[in-house]
Length: 118
Image 1 (cartoon, rainbow, N blue to C red):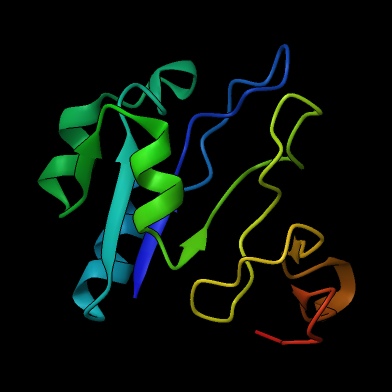
Image 2: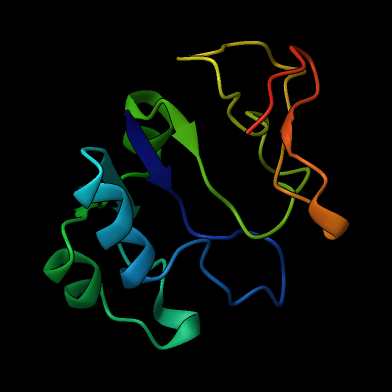
């Protein structure tokens, strides 16, 4: 599975959805991780740290969105983004699909449209 990590686009949002340690876990499990260039800058994580643990850095966010099977993010997308979150289903193209991460108290996350669970 290809997992994409675009830069956060909301104002005053400096987090990145994954750390280099998370990239290492995913790539060790056989997944590919695409990180947008500079996505970790606000969290003081340089691109080189992601590359060192197996991520591929992409300059164009459109490539991340089009090539990834799942998108990770720290916050919901801003109104400026029309794509929404990726569904756990491979290449779900539903414009109304939203991915919920694992919530508080161990509640499972999943795709709100398809009911998929982690």
